[in-house]
Image (cartoon, rainbow, N blue to C red; front, side, top):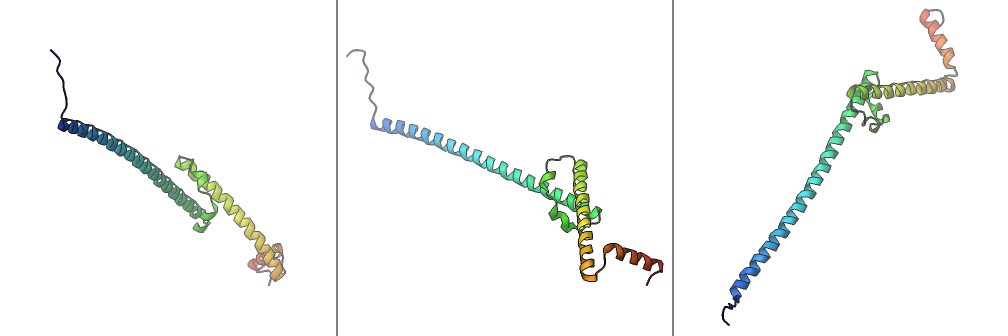
Length: 147
């Protein structure tokens, strides 16, 4: 027994050691949970921020469409016939506006064509006049030749 020293821990020392380990484990788990929550919240914020940015861009393009319609003398309600999504990928405003203007001009030509067609059908059904004949009558009346 010479030179041997037995170290026995008291109940208090064991409790203290256990409490230290427990605190350490709790701290580690809390830190992990906080980090995980922070990461999740950052991703949510990033997603929401991207959504807001995309929504803002869509509204800006809609405004450009309305301006193009007004520039071409059309009612702003025609904006519903032009797809905004097709212009999202065009970054430069001048190119985007030119593309929008092209769509507006196509819409205007289509609308005018349909209006002319429907007016002709109406004139023929209701008044019994072909659109060409009515046009020549109006021209004669304007010149004071026909009554």
